[in-house]
Length: 299
Image (cartoon, rainbow, N blue to C red; front, side):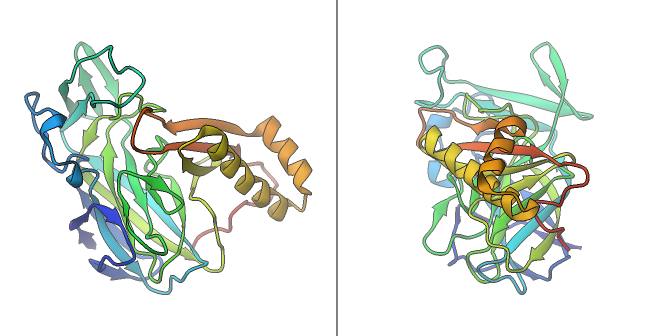
């Protein structure tokens, strides 16, 4: 099986691919933690690290046949994390600035559980940074956007399918920034940051343009939108869901909006404001039995 381990620190159409695959192929991504091994113990504070080398993503991988206007589906088959992770407070980031000191906490992970002081709780490994290259320019891995990036959605777990717009030939897919556990909002700026491996099967859906990434779990389908202001981000997520409902179910846009209001859920994935990075919001709908899928089946 193909394994890749080279990392980059931005999403860009200029990055040379580390591998080429065909739709339906599986790839194992070997990842570093979000600090790229610069923080390894309690004495290592984030104020001393090189922030140009954070949130590394493994890849990119070129997908044969992927062209602008297509959608790439990354089916997450498994996530295995290391035995030790890091949680840190960040300077000038998050709503609790002024009420906590700079601290690095080493958190052990044993047999699927995290040990935090006198608490032991189950981990839920997830992928924080994931996506495809933008059409032009470079976007640092720590920034979310319409290409994906630092989405930090806690449902980006094994068994989920993530959908990304293809905006450059080959898609140039990459991922990294694993968390053993992370809460909605990630208000302190970190989850349990940890390295590991992710096994992904890549699918291609031709001629399906999306404005924003989407995430499918066992019983829900979400749009993941991002930006600096909540109202604008919520509007972007709602508008994509409204259009998909109307197209899939033959409803007009007003009924689609009403349905979103009575069955849709909005939640914040990441908003450690104040921050230099944009917030991420997900808008989700349940999968309705007997109704057409909002997205075609991949593969």
